[in-house]
Image (cartoon, rainbow, N blue to C red; front, side):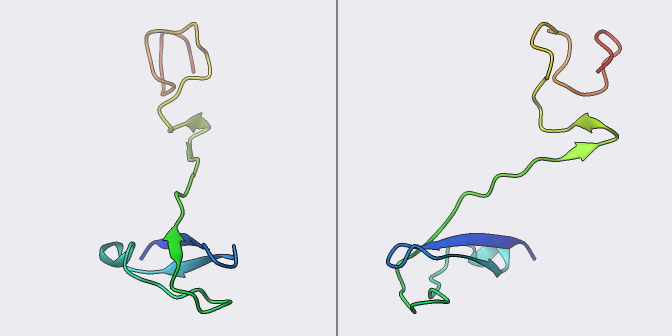
Length: 76
């Protein structure tokens, strides 16, 4: 099950909850103040694979032949 990040809109406390994807946006109570004014945060992540970025962005902006994967044209 994924871990989701939440923010309490009343006390500004940030916390995480392990929930099924089907319940990601279901109501949740703040773990600190008990408020039901909780909103799911957008989680940002970065992945690496074999020393190459798998995020879909290219570190070399001059290369138009790939998107940052394993490219024989620019060797990145």
